[in-house]
Image 1: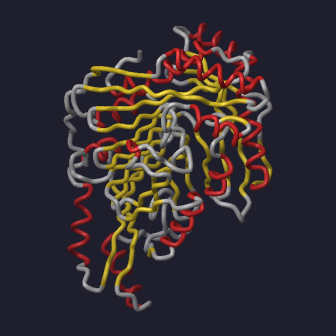
Image 2 (image 1 turned 180 degrees about the horizontal axis):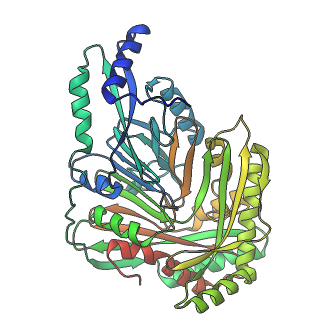
Amino acid sequence: MLQTKPFTINEQLNKAKEYMDTVNQTQLMVSLVEKVNFINPVQFFSYYQNQDLLRLFWRDSEDSFYLVGIGNYKTIQSHQNRFHSVQQQWEGLLTDFFIPNDSVKGTGPLMLGGFSFNDSVMDDKWKTFQSGLMVVPEAMLTVIQGECYMTYNVTVNENTDVDALTTKLKQWTENINDQYESNVPQQLQTTNSLDYRNWEQLIRDAVNRIKNGTLGKVVLARELEAEFNQSIDLNNVLKKLVEQQKDSFIYIFDYGDDAFISATPERLVKVDENELLSTCLAGTIKRGDSLKEDDLLAQSLLNDEKNRSEHQYVVSMIKEAIEPLTHSIDLPSQPEILQLRTLQHLYTPVTAILKDSYTIFDLIEKLHPTPALGGEPRQAAVMFIKENEPFERGWYAGPVGWIDAHGNGEIIVAIRSALINQNKATLFAGCGIVEESDPYEEYEETKLKFTPMLEALGGISR
């Protein structure tokens, strides 16, 4: 097969100007893509700290795919009917893009961002992160199986100096792989969380609702507010997360004084062409101190009626939600164990073929929130959370991730997460409440789930 050599940045810009003349436009949005020598994605993210630029970071749970976006070329904010609103704006924006090079998957026009757990966000501390916010970066590094590509999103007009713009764009990747000198890590000073007596009452209220048949399951969470001796260095946090959370997705949205970060094992949905992958993750136990203890704990989890019941809620709901949108669902009959650094989970992957008339946005709307994040029945569980949980979830447990120009994308559930503002961080952790739930055991489970993020931030769970 004859291989066509990709166009250089200079050639792509000239093609864009030629196209602009052909269609008689005075300006044009262009997405330029070039393959580059290896750039460390963590160093690329770190290099642009303190430069007053929005930063976005994504790593998949297989450690094979990275996206690092810098700068804000275009912003899409949700309106009423948020998933549909963002989809309409995105599809409209794409019609105006000129893409000179055949795109490698994960390059070209691509947006990263997320949505809140609930339809609206009222709490002032979430003012930066609205109910739906997606960003097309100015410059984006894509790393796929070690191969690196840069995407530059620019606007050209009849007066654009192609040579000067080419030189300017090359500056995005200059000096990136120089050794990054991290700051002295911040130290934890104080923590504050919901009093156990209040937590106990919340769980008992939920269990009573379940016993009287109002709810089948509800997922409840608590905050941990942590204050440090200095502003939190996201570069240090990212480095720790990448090193410690090998089997988790890592996501950062760094926007001015505020940042939202998540190291989550939970995928909501992935779409690759028309292939769909969703995962059911519900039921948790700690890791052991030895392989033998690990195995004993895993078997205990697999045989635990409460956790299996909680897991089955999620499996059944996901199957029911995606069935009308897909062909040939493949659903294992039994869960397996997913082992993370400090935790083990019951895990069931669900694969299917997406029907042509549906998109990843339809899947997000159908799936969010799953019983692993909200409960069952969905509406009743979400209402109980709104009325009884003593904080605003914001983007915690919301769908976040990326979507490209071809409808491919991956959306995760932002658990094991934190909202950061200068020297303060609010961490979030939750657990599924069913009829057999014990408040103390659930409290201890949330403490365990706080640990990875608090360690990365420089503190110790308490």
